[in-house]
Length: 174
Image 1 (cartoon, rainbow, N blue to C red):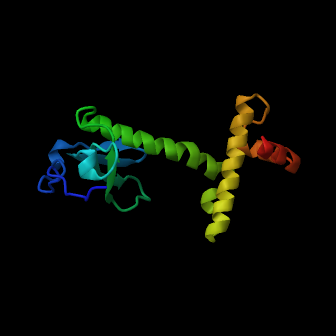
Image 2 (cartoon, one colour; image 1 turned 120 degrees about the vertical axis):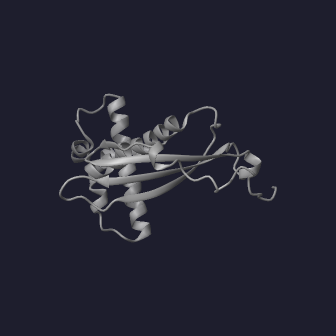
Image 3 (cartoon, rainbow, N blue to C red; image 1 turned 90 degrees about the vertical axis):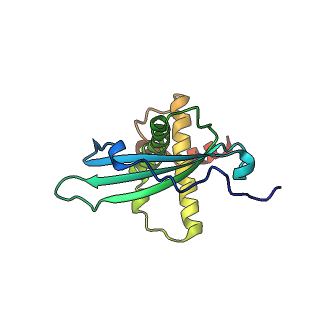
């Protein structure tokens, strides 16, 4: 393995695009704007197999309404296998947002709504891992039952109420 070298193109002298170049977008009762800075690298320079660029996205948010939270300004950092020529800045911002939306609205939302995961007060690491594994098992079993048309339950909660220990044990043995 080679030693890590600072990429030549990794210059912090060029900041994010200026304020006048990025417009605010209103969505979900807030104003948002995102700016992207990317640095082209080779996998050898980055030390990551298949990594062709590092990306930084600055997200600025201002809540609207009476119960508005304080404005936020944060930067997220990413390593990607796509080259700088494959996507425009706007397309890359959309791809990254779409990835996190899928995570939040897919698995996490379902786990929180079905099992109240965010309200769970378990703090011991081992117990939290066991509960997470059980939640994953129940969600996976529900998806398999839906795909195989083996349940008429309209949701994970309903399926969980119908499941007995014997049914769960049989599912584990598959």
